[in-house]
Image (cartoon, rainbow, N blue to C red):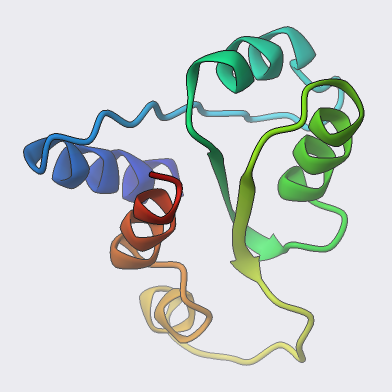
Length: 110
């Protein structure tokens, strides 16, 4: 998903929107220092994960920031649903994990 986020950030940059992409490769331990720094310098945070939004990165970020540094957050990931089979890109598109959905979420933070 980092590649898609980087592509979205580049597209946003061409429209004059500065987006920071962080590869938060672990949830535990959560990089709370980085989250605090980001929360103070951005309009909002969009988390993107290629699995359930329940109990994932978005949940961990939301939980931490809501208690320590309230920030607007949008979580992009797989909603609570039954799994399906198919080609990787087809499935990512089916659940809305696309460059366009990342861009749209980032634009709502402005």
